Image (tube, rainbow, N blue to C red; front, top):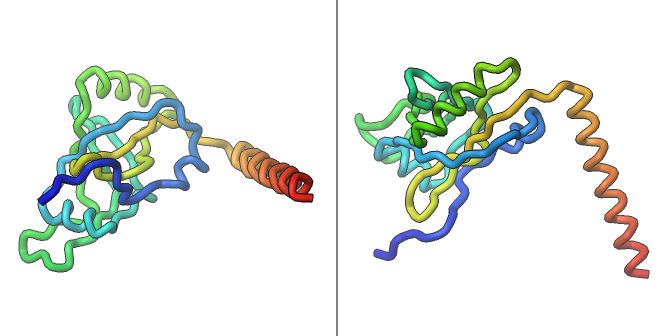
Length: 156
């Protein structure tokens, strides 16, 4: 059987980019059980309520929903269990120091397979205020309108 190559996206957290200012991005491995891997390969997961927490010099992914595997038996996993993330010690220490600052948190951005291994893209983020969110939406809408106008002018 041929080995998977490349990046296969399973789930992304688009709401995180709307709710947070992304300051730094990391790629971490995820410790999963067999039925979790099978459920992910089926393309089922939700990162919407997920966050990361440093506990005893270990990084944990919490609140991520990976539904039970339909063909699983008594070995099935709990859908919202804590999952350990695999990062280098220096990266964990740096994240721990940054999250002690007011307003900083670690959120998952994407869950994917990279060359057959489950990975999660996490970000050190700062929460946006309500007016920041409105301003970002307005800028995006203005850019879309400008692009549309340029395209119409070019097509004439």
